[in-house]
Amino acid sequence: MTRLSRLCCLALFGSASLFLAGCGGAPDDRPELADVTGVVTLDGEPVDGASVAFSPKSGMRGASAQTNELGEFELSYASTMGCPLGEHTVEISTRREIQDEYGGVAGMEPETIPPQYRGNSTTLTAEVTADGENHFVFDLTSKK
Image (cartoon, rainbow, N blue to C red; front, side):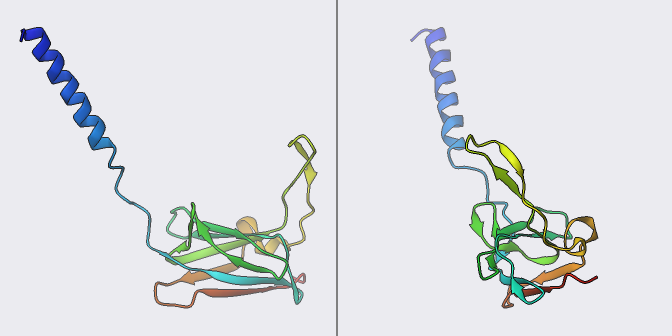
């Protein structure tokens, strides 16, 4: 075997080794999650189609869900059911895009959630624990 062919074989072997090492994937750096469920009502009535977002006060990525016709939700983090542990601010909103027949934005749904429950002025918090029930009921009122 010539020196050039040995170098080519070595380079090929090294490349294959690096490729196979990369196939193992990255370590799982996902935070510890807990199942979180809840209900959102406004003036005693369930809120259908509301976005519910739990944002950890630690600054890491949060979890979100959309309420059903009974106002119920179950949070998911990325593509996994659950929410990171810890203290969270909670934002609830019904404002969302209306799609036209071509998939474009035709407008926005009107917001029905009072401003104190969404955005930077949110007054809602939740503590998600590893050993708790983690079921939260948000009884919102339209009065300030």
